[in-house]
Length: 622
Image 1: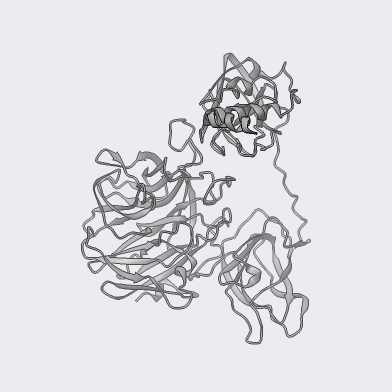
Image 2: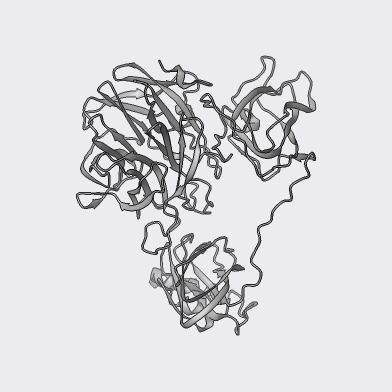
């Protein structure tokens, strides 16, 4: 015991890692598993890597022996490159991770010499093979960046490459039921999404379930302790359903609708903590959903929205897809509003912080009335050029804010570009378009006095004289996301010419002006946790700024209606009419974004508030 202790005392950290790596390799299988040396083209390739451990060298990744390993040396995003002396035709790969449970490749992007790329996800952490089959291509080299890697010594035990890929995988598609057939959807159906304890009857807890057909019936159990729930079809409120009964009763029809448009639909159920006066609780219990199949399961017929509904579980666009406007912003131009926001439909990355997703870029929509939205596409998703900031799909685009540059007439999207640590990459980037609906083309990192604009959360503002501004977080050792740095933009909005720290604090800023007073809204510094948002006012944009208090008042105002400020939108043609948008960031369900839209009340110069309304319309503004 004493000898071992003395030996460990003289070992350096790097030697300890090397010994661990060596011991780990010895513990694995010592014979190749399922490797065809004659067909494995990796055996004929040269290999280079970003780094390597002494006993886990690069050659172990292509030696045909899955019992040996390549491991990087203290890196978060290692890479490996195979190169052949002559062109080779390839159509299949087999990747095996290290079996160390703390060091996982997980997945990454493969760049081929012909300029094409391939994402390979879900590499098993136990060393079992992950096969990737793709259309044949001729290459001289390929490089894999392990962007999803976890641990400081990730790597591969084997990287096999083959000329023949066999059959390309075909997605499994469910056969549609015959028209008129009865379809039953149960709570374990994978199409169902729910957040925030729907069954417990919490305020604004929601469930949504897609279905197809011409009718729908929701069946549940009514009990003496049941509450109420609002029912939505295709994002439009239908009725408040009662689950209460003096005696417990099973298989009660709590909602039914017929004569639906033949095609795709979305059922939404929303609880708000309401109940019958005689009920002892607010919980709801549903058992199944019955639908009658139609003839056009591929079709969606949009329902026309005529009012704002802050309760809506999911807001659908013209295709029947949930609006992807997370952390977004709104621009008005020539009779239409344009909404740009982060797309949350991408794959979740296990082991990453903040419910991190692969970058899917930002989505663009247009609407004549801020209620009915048409989708125009996604922009600034992953790139194929290795030195591009968007090549790494873990670098996400967020807090998108649109402007029309007063100096050029071009449409500019300013957005946060950040990595999962908020430290290696935390800047404001720029994309440019000729039209407000896009396409938006990557321009670069915003510069101020020759330096990249640092910081996280973004907001934009155009003043009465046409001058345009950006608000961002101020990055620093102790202030990683303090949104109180103001930048004056150049006339083309492609650079900043002046900056100042305002000292207002907070994150998630939004800025608007009315009758000579600037209103600056902020969230508390709690990241993705909801809180009571506050605001400051000033008569000069550069300050001084006066703290005013909380923005949300009255019923349901706790933690700003369970949201975080996203943007404040001036209503075209209506003086003093502003709409506040809250981002329901507590909802981290993939691809499902909830927003709350409420009118801003200006009580007096420098005094504003938000109050909950179950429904309202633009005509409510005087």
